[in-house]
Amino acid sequence: MSLLEALAIFAAGMAAGTINTIVGSGTLVTFPTLLFFGYPPVAANMSNSLGLVAGGITGVHGYRAELRGQAHVLRRLIPASLVGSVIGALLLLVLPASAFKAIVPVLIGVSVLLVVFGPALQRRFAKAHEHTEQAVVAQGKSRTAVLLGGILFAGAYGGYFGAAQGVLLMGLMSVLMTESLQRLNGYKNVLGTVANAVAAVVFMIVAWHEIRWEAAGLIAAGALVGGYLGARIGRRLPPWALRGVIVVIGVAAIVNLLR
Image (cartoon, rainbow, N blue to C red; front, top):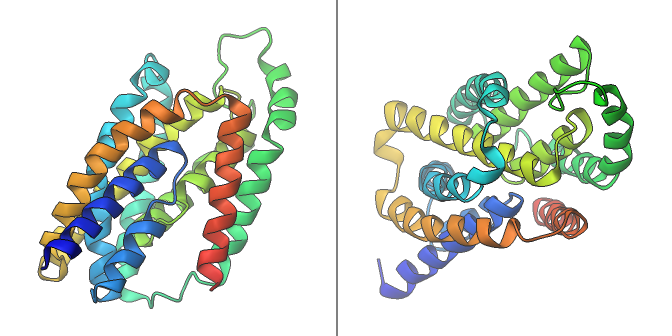
């Protein structure tokens, strides 16, 4: 590996770590970078998932204030993301990379719309919590089931490929949960990190020989810094700006995937 290639992969990892913490879609930076340097798609995907775990850890740490006191919520959400990510990681090993190609842009587009119209929907759902202490999940077992099912699906997508998983999660939670957008972003960082970490463990168990460790290490080093930067930037954004970033990243992801 040349010095230029190493620096490029490190820089891609740092950019991805920053983007993932703010909204998601960092894979759209690192994955094409690895392909550019000749890594096989499946090996690049697995190495990328492994490397981005480091950025997720620093991103979650950066959002610790928003996550303080939220263990009871995360205990409900994490299992769905965990199970989904195992399913997605195993699917990567048996399905062609084109399997999700048609549906993913549609999912991201719907998620972007949910984020845009989230405030109005949140106000509607918030009325259900005006006289309770639980401003967590919109009332009703059906909404909870939809939320957990959506997080499981997002986890599967994250384990399979993961680009714009954060946009999917934010769109889903913006509608079905009544927390502030920054707290939802904290949840998103936890769930995305769980999906990447579990997928990485599956890859190490099932396909250790296909992981390109030099690339994963460089991405991890860059993402570790990027996650810290992303938390500092993302936490300072007002809700309207954060929504704007999500929309821009989501549209860019759609364009990138359709090319």
